[in-house]
Amino acid sequence: MQILKECILYLLKKSLYLPVTMSSSSNLVAMKKIVQQLRFEASINRVKVSQAAADLQQFCMQNAMQDPLLTGVSSSTNPFRPQKVCSFL
Amino acid sequence: MRGVTSARQQHQLAEAGEPWWRQRESERKRPNTRTSSTIPSPLCASSLKMACQALQSGESLATLKNESDSLKKKLEEERAKLHDVELNQVAEKVELVSALSIRTRRVLKGHGNKVLCMDWCKDKRRLVSSSQDGKVIVWDGYTLNKEHAVTMPCTWVMACAYAPSGCAVACGGLDNKCSVYPLSLDKNENLAAKKKSVAMHTNYLSGCSFTNSDMQLLTSSGDGTCALWDVESGQLLQSFHGHTADVLSLNLAPSETGNTFVSGGCDKKANVWDMRSGQNVQSFETHDSDINCVKYYPTGDAFASASDDGTCRLYDLRADREVAVYQKDSIIFGASSVDFSLSGRLLFAGYNDYTINVWDVLKGNRISVLFGHENRVSCVKVSPDGTSFASASWDTSLRIWA
Image 1 (tube, rainbow over the protein chains, first blue to last red):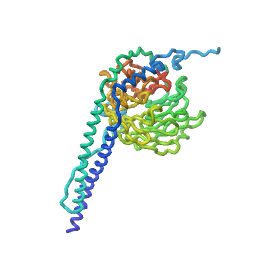
Image 2: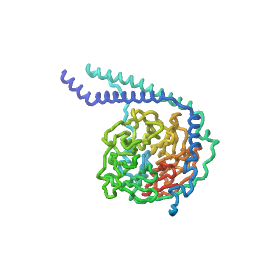
Image 3: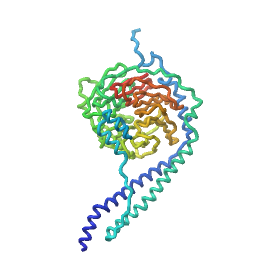
Image 4: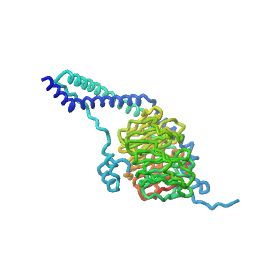
């Protein structure tokens, strides 16, 4: 009788319980990781958008003159513009 | 080509001749997460114990879930609090960008099949490009000479990168590996013989980039992870887990701002990582579809992303939120690639409708549309000195615009 019970238990474990326990514990681990990650993300320091946007704008303005694609460069200085024939001076 | 979301798109891609594995990949969007259920057993002590354990984990699972929900809400509130103004409002007083005279200056022909990726060399004239047929070619952009050509043993070489020294190129794709080829000045030398396999992933390689030196290589893969490798030994130095689907793109922060990089993937998320610890520092999820490309702003305080939903978005890292969306109702095709000009004022984005749009980063409006390619634009990169940008396309050519 006891042996029969053990056999039934063993078969049930194989088919039913083991997967359930494993999925719940792996879900637990995954969930813990997600919560830890969220805690970390919630703790970072943030700046207001107005401040961040102002800084982006300032960088753009400061470097606008050094941006060849923005200001356009003359054919002589841009290496990719139509090549002129080289002449020895 | 990047990610597939709807059945309609899948059908379109199937017609366009997408490889079978790409379509399958898209179906596997998220890992299967079953919610736990406790099944009490009346049978005997050991099974009862197991049932008790299951019950315990079930309880703490519920509390964890509550905590994660409340944290997510708190994060949203924190981010919303800082949203006092829009970027284009701040930039109202800024002058409009005058008409740009950008045209195709060079057309690089030589690939036999779709060009999937390209990269500039630090010397501002050489480029490396890789294509679907496995060929990797190093070009001289000024003279149109092909300096080196390597045939990879696999097809769909989706990632290629030039080493900072200009002495090597890294490339990879369907072979799940990233290999480094040292470039020699001797034309007769067989480059393939000197190949060094550095990275090993369990799925296709979607992106690779050297860090500040030739010694370390950062890769992203369809297996959902990014990894940092030592080139000499091939050892894995750090791996980055967090994406729940294929990672399609990565970009290193400009060297002044430290050791971080951003990655974007099919899970619609863009994650910022700390290279040393492997920690996911920030995460952004506002796109409606796969993120095909991510690129840092020149200061490293923000980054832009291009997605299959047809929009490009700018995320500010210090404000920890999206600050601009670059979209138009007339743009219905996905954006495959983005890059900033040197000052960060212009955003060049390549789309699947064969065009390249130039956006004003601050004001949010489209400055111009560049036509020329005869098929999807797969990659757009501004040259290191900012004088030009190159675009790679499925029409087998590369174009240099200035």
